[in-house]
Each structure stands twice: as structure tokens, then as C-alpha cells.
Image 1 (cartoon, rainbow, N blue to C red):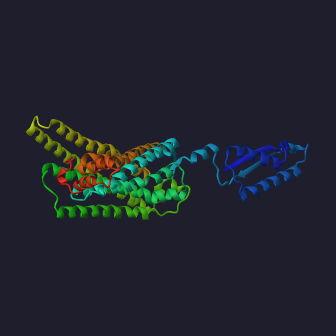
Image 2 (cartoon, rainbow, N blue to C red; image 1 turned 180 degrees about the vertical axis):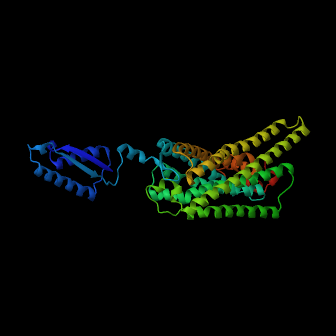
Image 3 (cartoon, rainbow, N blue to C red; image 1 turned 90 degrees about the vertical axis):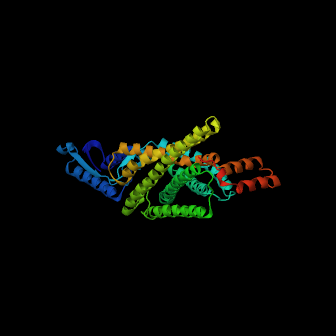
Length: 424
């Protein structure tokens, strides 16, 4: 930054003139004096003294105008307002420009919402895991639900890191850890949950059309193998995102995860996003088609029975629409917002205002996907009779868990016929 300062000889000593200028600038700038500036201060003083000797007071030289050009090479050249704003800036994509964002939303509201999800989700999913692992895996349905519980619990364990990072309560290394590990685990578990939701939907459709068919050992083995394949595929897809987030963290690049990725890391990140989009939309079609067919099948059953069991049929139909509603609320908005947001991260195609809008939309819809981890235990309660019976028994008999009657009830639940599961 180059500043030209002009003053008459009679203004006073050059040293005083210099420090007056410095004081004024310090009022506005975050100032750090460098060796270059110290040298120039000395040169300015010498120039003034030489000029005074050449044009003594009272001569024509008393109107001599001194011109000092000071090159400020400061470590930080920002106004106080800019310094405050910089703490709340997030780097934009592409050319590295910076866009201001409302820190009350990013640093207060979202961390608060995730904190609520963490405590609710940790309690409900821990309870769900305890119950499910007391139930024998005698149906594909139970196997898929157990995998969903594990996935949801892993996702919930990433929330504290996101809260600390977003609220600016952590250090640069913590933010780098969030970008490299916990954010990747978050998306990894999200798409595992979506995949198992698709498999659960197919299983419920089969149960509706063939209610008396029981699972044989080969089917159970197939469900377990399929579960392992899903976990392995998503892990192999996500691992490069961890490895390729390998740039050395600094105060600037930790503000945006894409700045920590290598050049190929950005390319891989974009590829993974498109693959995950495909995974979502495949499962979206599965949910729509299967539950449409389930509704059609239930309606046919209702027509055949006419006046018999109207209330139960109504309850079952409500369950159908609850599942679809949860899927739409939790997952659909985010996947509409994710493609343009990914472009804003990896390419310079949006202006600052658009990037901020996409960021707020992405964060809001991402919170909805996180909400799914807290809603799943309630879905287990309505869909899985074994889960419901075990939970009810646990709540009623928590003080008499060792009684013979309780053991007999739990044995009946563990060894029960999987066909007792609610179809939808």
C-alpha cells in the first residue's frame, strides 16, 4: 500500500510528522511495523533535515513542500471492521474470493440444532441397538434394521465434532480433522442408511405380497453378504476422500474443506457426489414403486374384506405414508440442493450471494438428513413387532429382569416367527 503525504516545512519535525501519520493509520488499520517501514522512516527524517539545511527559515524555501511516500508493508492491512468480518468469512470456490455469512446462523443456530440431535439420537439409538442385539436375526428385515442402527449411531457420533467446528470452539487441527474424517464418515453412514432403507422397502413389499413365506438360511446368508457388500463399497468409495484431503491446514484453508483437498481430491469428491446421487435416486425409485404397490395390495385386501377390519387397515395405510413422508422430508431436499452446492465448491460458477444461499440451503437440508437418525428408532417401533414387544417388556420389567416370567416372554420374542413383523 503506497501513501503520499505532503506537508509544509513549518508543520514540524519530520519525526513528529511521521508518528502523527502512523497514529492516525493505527486508528483504522491493524498495524505491524516491518524493517522496510523502519528504514523508510529514517530516510524521511534525513530528507527533512537536508531540506531544512538547504532552505533556512525565512528564505524562499520556507514554502518548500515536503513529499513523503511511505510504502506500508504490513503483516495485516485490514480495517478493524474488516478484521472482525474476516473471522466470519468463508472462502468461496475457484478464485479463493471471500464471502461474508451470518455468523449467528453458522456459529449458533446450526450447532444448537445438532446438539439437540446428538443427545436425542444417542439415547434412542443406543436403546435401539441394545434391543436389536437381543433379538435373533431370523429374518432379512431384522438384519437390515440392525445395520441401519449401527449406521445411525456412527453418524450421531460425528455430531460433536461438527458442533465444535461450526461454533468456532475448536482449533485449526480440529477443523482439518472434521474435513478429513468426520465429514466423510457422516456422508458414508448417510448413504448406507439410504441403501438399507431401500432393501427394507423391498423386503416389506415381499412380505405384503407373500405374507406367509418364511426366511430360510440361504436367504439370511444372502442378506448378510449383501450387507457386507454395501459397507465395503461405501468404505472404498469414501476412503480416497480421507486420503486426498492432504493439504497442510492453515488459518485460511481450514475454513472450507475443499481447500484442504488436492487437485485430484476435488475431482474425486465430485465423482463421489454424483455416485451418491445415483445411489439416492435408485433407492428413491424403489421406495416410490414398492410403496405404491404395497398400497395397491392393501387396497385390494380391503376391498375383499369390505367391512371387516377397517380400523386396522386404516392404521396400516397411515404407516405407509409415514415412511414415505420421512423419506421425502429427510433425504429429498438435500439431494436437490447438493448438485449445485458441489459445483460451488469445485468450480467458480456462482457469485458470492448465490454461494451463500446454496450454503444455507445445503446446511438446512443436511440437518434434515441428520434428523433421520433420530426418527429411525420410532420407525422401528411401528414396523417391527419384535422390537416393539422387547421395548415394552424392557420398560415394564426393568426392575424384574431376572424373573422367570420375563425370561419366558423375551424367549418368545427372540424366537418368534418373523412373519409377525408388520408388513409396512
